[in-house]
Image (cartoon, rainbow, N blue to C red; front, side, top):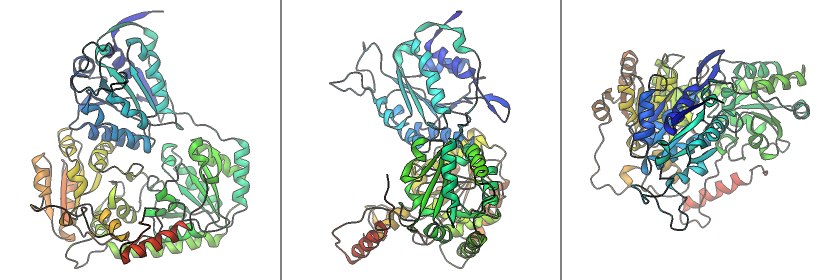
Length: 614
């Protein structure tokens, strides 16, 4: 076996460059780039190896480790998990800053490779700068914090260990059932050490993402359950994107006459003008879809982990004969809540399940009812989002103004907070793949950082980020990143004076306004933030507007701009689209106010309807 002598750092970079993937029959780099902030844990060795190979593996300078990793996660989602970014940091706070981003990737089943620096394997200079010491376990470092929030974790303490570790990390990140982030911590001293690596380790490797076929018995059992139903619905999740099963979903719904609801992460897997499109379901859903959920006797969940906002904390399905069929490539997700599991790829499983169903279809009245209720709900949203003489516009009015003036291919980006629910009501998809969000971990600050990654993955599309003032103040440095990398974003800052959606929850639970809106917190020196001027200082074009008509005009200027454009507008802190689903959020069992008593009554009522299961 031929061998080549390399430092560990150079071997890592050489291996990453050799990894390719087939996307639509075309060979592409599996790792299109690296986001990095260098420090004493990664600059001297890994940093130099990256500099020497920047043409094959470009490195993008980050401004905050969490943000740069969120950008990589946004890119991976937009690329439907077919390409993976690397994020590298120094030891210490640089590494721990990425732990939140790792949790985002873990919760959303998205790949990213973390390469944080680590302490010395030989321990000779311990404690090194930024080292966290555990007096009874010297093998523990700050990077152990990645273990609960990654699918694969390793620490390299000898240079030859990468031969086993990196291929395992790659296969984990490409596994459709086990996909998630990988972290390989790199001991500082090991990065510069040499080893005689086998040349075979660096040969070009072309990857594909496998499509596990479902079990015949599971398909048969699922088909029998569906055939016995009268009013079935489909719940389309993010896994439909990752399987590229949008066409199969469409044909399945038409052939078997089943209305299609969508989760937040699966939104825009079907267009609004589709004959069986029903809209979003659950805690952020419309009254129309949640009405279907309450009546349905069977739900076919496709590519969704069935989180609480999808199921109304499992109180949304009130039919006593309700059954669940769950199609998922992950055994863990497919078998939740007493479901008839179909463990397999969504595209393949839908095809085989349709064949097993033959000519069976649900009654025509059921889908007609779905379309009638959808029409009514759309009319309600159109009315709510229309301009009025209201002095301070609501979220939906702001979003409506952007939606009316957007192109069908424009991509809306949201995360966390109240904007997700409001955007998903208004931004009814005119094209597939036009809504991207982070709702698995509901991470504030993804709005801008994630949008940057989505723009990098879709350079020819307009990417519009809706962000609240709270998330903007939390992290905004990727405005600067978008400017200097020439990845234009349109960012709409909705300033409602603090964390208004949590203030809404606080009031709904019978509490008094406290510490959420700026005006109700301990802020004796409260001043208004000029978001437009702040964004302008980072190189963006920007303006502040005070009316819907001015917002529409500003958006047209933003569309014409060739650089990131930020528009800020004051928005109402108390006007929301009316909810229609239970969400299990704790309530005081010993009420201290009349409002607490009412909240507790509603809470118990919702809990009484929860479906029992594992």
